[in-house]
Image (cartoon, rainbow, N blue to C red; front, side, top):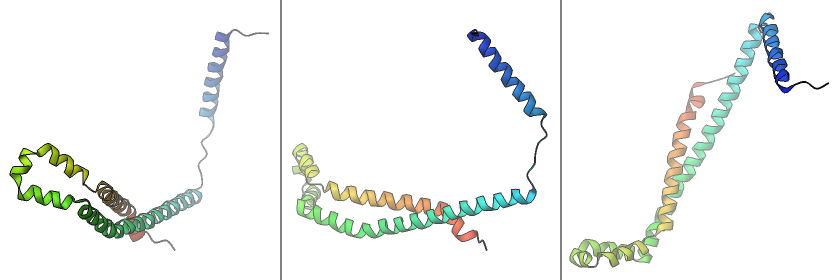
Length: 149
């Protein structure tokens, strides 16, 4: 026996409303207060533990990024000196008349001698440091305020 598709949809909606009425008539079961408090306490402990782990992780990541800034800066300065960027920059500050007359060639030469890799690494380390500090301070509340036995 085949049922018409429209009639089949009517049965589903009728069944859905019947179940809704049935479940609305059932008495509501409340959990015991001790169980409720126990679940909330364990959820809070897990949340605090996760915040402490995140704090430690972001603290070490920020420390590593901060420490890496020293050799990265030294390397970028060395690259700038070796590529001649410092010489071109000092020429721009000392002889501006020549720079104004040949500004296109000078700007291309200055851009070519720029230590882009060193600058990119410094900016990446700075971004990592700042984001780590932001996340560590967000999660520091768990380390310094909550104490469980």
